[in-house]
Image (tube, rainbow, N blue to C red; front, top):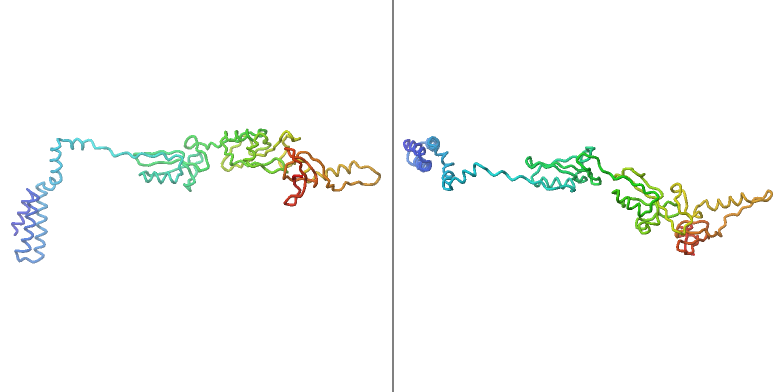
Length: 344
């Protein structure tokens, strides 16, 4: 039995396959033929495996088993595989997609799914910390395909991108539109990069309602800008409040000039609550007569006051006027209990 085991090592040195077959036969014989203790049989089995490994290793069978077949194939192919091995094909480089203009969180997600590692920073000169990535927009990106990394430069969603990474934010400058018609002012604001939806309109007179943007645009050559905020040349950021105070005049209006200050003047003097008292005071000052004092009281008879605006506040009750289209109007109680101009 020991001779058979030695034969395993000898055959394994010349042929690993033949030695393996003999080892199997030897192990079967060890467990069947001799009356050895079980631990002796187990030791003989392990020894047969060791002898095969040692013999095959000394004979070079283990190395040849991993290289023999490729070498034969290389000879059959006329050395083609050898040439391929000498000039391996480089790994395909990752190509970074363009993520500019996208929300930062989406850009990072797409880049990571493409195999890149991501980082980000503020594209403006302030070098602010980026907290909520969904509130930032990508302006620039720098990809390293070798390192498979990409860095995003972003600004807040309501901010314009700088001309270059790390530059100042190019906020628009407020144009000077005082004295211009609303049509001209709207063109100047758009040209400066200011969204008209962010502009608040107000009527320059206390007794007239502020026009909507649609109303001002419809009669844009009749409305004129009397006051503006902010002043000309001021930087208009995402938090700047823009307002235009407008006055509207037609050929029928007696006064076609802006007042000296905002919220101080009534277009129709009779709409001023102090208008009647001023008239009474004038009459008292011009009255004569020894020791007696005359007073006109609060006349409600009214009188003609010229051009009026339908629906605006008026005083005194009973006063009359006409609209710009010539419609007769009378000052009387409105639905809210206050005197307003309505058709006579």
